Image (tube, rainbow, N blue to C red; front, side, top):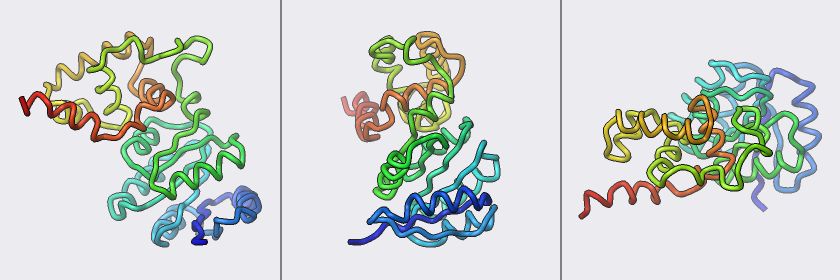
Length: 227
């Protein structure tokens, strides 16, 4: 059995020791540790096909920058951030890049193992607890289909927004003006009773919208040009 290399990159030795103890009994995992701080992150990212695990109460700009930098250099980079307070930049990063995951520090070991296996396969992973912390309406306030109020075109705008694209980038994807995209975003926020793009992205992730293949919407946007 080929094992998944799990690389613990964290300045908090107590947290790292706890993770090592929790993961060492998982048969398909091989657990090791990297150094602390920025140097430790870069060391972890340079180790090949492993999944780096990083713990931050609130991820700082340097951590997100190093992750972006690492992903540019290596498309196959895999990393899981364990956080208490997600930031907009971090959610955008996870949306933009397969293989980057975010989960809550209060998650179970079972969820941690499942998330690491998903990331090793090159999938995206954002835990429900992280999305709940990012804001939006509570479960009791949401409708059975929270996205049922928006049109198919608005749903596509929300899809690209959840993957971290700017209005300008979405306009190019959908072959629409940037002003039209801005209007769609405003309508989405109003219909979903949300105050900003981060909360809209969190709701989209919670409902599984970003899990749809990009080809579905890429082909849909191209259809008018083919007729």
